[in-house]
Image (cartoon, rainbow, N blue to C red):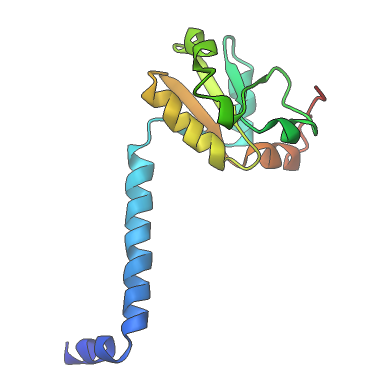
Length: 141
């Protein structure tokens, strides 16, 4: 035990770095366990989109959409989401699949939607980048 204490005294930056990584890991796992939406991959997204009454929500900004969207997507940029939330309330009881470029912004939108009372919300893990990597089509607006 004395060796561990000596090591900790001799290498404080390593100890602080380790504690920081450990704290971040614990925080991210707790966040993952407490989220109320699902993270789904491309294959599961295709299966979900084959069902009826699914809202596909593209939350990328306008300039990003020029490269194409997933067929049937409703485009509401993240920056306009709060002001346009009333457009989505009729889908509150339907499955909702949200995507952005990489899956990060859409995860925040999924969190907001669940707080607004949406019941079945999913985030496309990897976003449009994962969709394109799977050689799935995008349509031009």
